Image (cartoon, rainbow, N blue to C red):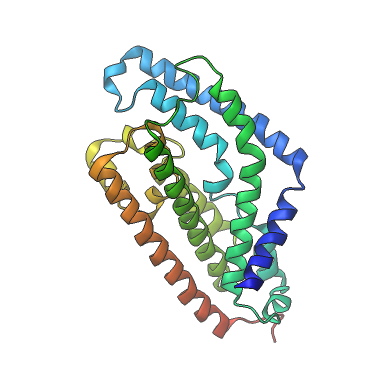
Length: 267
């Protein structure tokens, strides 16, 4: 365990060094969040009763989504891992006395957390001081906030576990571009990154909520905004634990298969 914590600390410290990139990301995410909220505002003005969330809750959903973008976006994958597989540098990784799945998992987790830490606070502070209903509202209760934190980290675990499947699948392909694009597109649509899941028709939403993608950002953001509560929230948290276990187990099984068949430079 100590060696994986060491990988985590090294990658986390490295991620905190990219402050200029973080500043550019903050500006981009704040601008995008503003445009998205103004777009929703136009729809709400037309018919507020037609929407399953209040405009204040929707604005909070968007700001939290932008603040923690680095935790949940599947397109923010580690190019270093893909390059190691395709260029043959994976041979150096395999020489280390570590489990490559656990090492990559720790590195991916640290990379996302460091990026989110640099970007989240400025966005949250600015959003908190914006006038109602455009700003970030407080959670309904301290208990809701604690559940938000729990589901936030569970969602992060589900995202990293899913991305691990994408990394390892590249052992069986010539190029990673196609599977990366397909995976990122699925996550964006089915996790509520483009349109929050409550805005979908009820029958479709119930199906989407059973998929692993709904256990990513959908659950913590809806808990924070007050849209997910009661038995629905309990079911969503159980599904987060379920998909974290299933995706991690699947990733380890696929990794074990890849390690038996891996070929480096034709050797």
